[in-house]
Length: 174
Image (cartoon, rainbow, N blue to C red):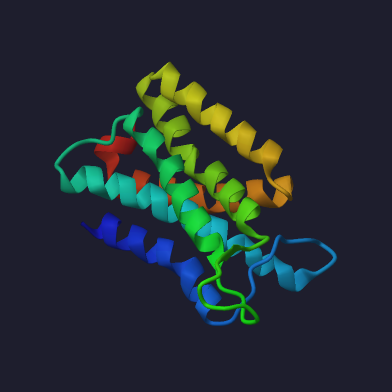
């Protein structure tokens, strides 16, 4: 149960960041203040991994490598929902997708795909491993700032996998 709660907490962080008035944009080296944009995909990736792993634990099951392929779908869903917003100068009935959505989704996919890559390699499931690698490569190739998307995804996904490895050894250790 703590994984589910921590996963929901992590998934809520980008929305709380935006509601606090912090603008999440695609990071650039020219504007160091834009590096706060790394937090959104990192939190989405970590939250998705912890949520799916926690849901499996709540159901009393071990997270299978092929079921871990649902993590990227959670990343895409939450990243896309994060991108919707209502600009202040248009009617409330108008919804737009913000410019940071491709970066958030791309970075979250990189991090979220770590779950099938790690579990596929540890459990010997080649299909999950290859599918995870394809998702990582596609996300890096299509992200607006591929290096920053990879950094954010690896940071969030890596921390979530390390936490899962430490606390849920039955699922994550060989």
